[in-house]
Length: 219
Image (cartoon, helix red, strand yellow):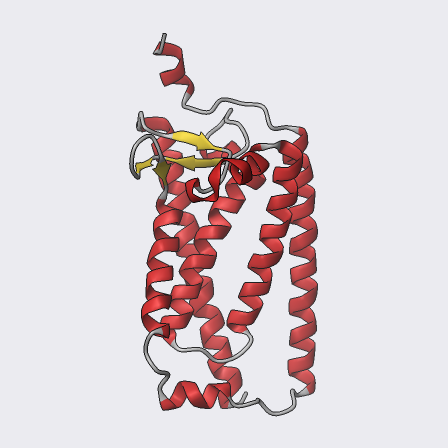
């Protein structure tokens, strides 16, 4: 295995570690918040900054399912580009945090909410006050932190090592071609799974938007 392959293997493990950490911490936080925090709720309309029209698309079962599939396509493509060549640690961490946060929220919409918030409607579990009546979650904080890290990194000129990474890589070996094919097959399988879950979620989107114990005591 040459130096480029070793570098790519290390960055894949780094991004995998970021994904595992963000998703596990975020989902555990959502699980705990739904059972213990009064401010937790189900957000079916996506980010507040999207505006009422686009948020209504996300909240609608049919258009929301389409949005989930499109979001998954963008996420898979972004990960492919992030890991397609050697990157600095800051770029990998920033991009990994943004992608992992988006993935964890997307998992909520694709059915993970049945585990973290049993009986809830299709949507994302939010519980951290973020101004007014709005809420966010740990995945959102990861997205913001990752975006800030990316912005800070991109504001600075690339080092000589990063400049070298931009140089076209030599023709891929047969083993590299097989690995690339395996990645494409895995991405296709993941996309098919997303489509299946999105359709299932569109067909079964009923449920509560706040913890049942709190809803039971409110007038």
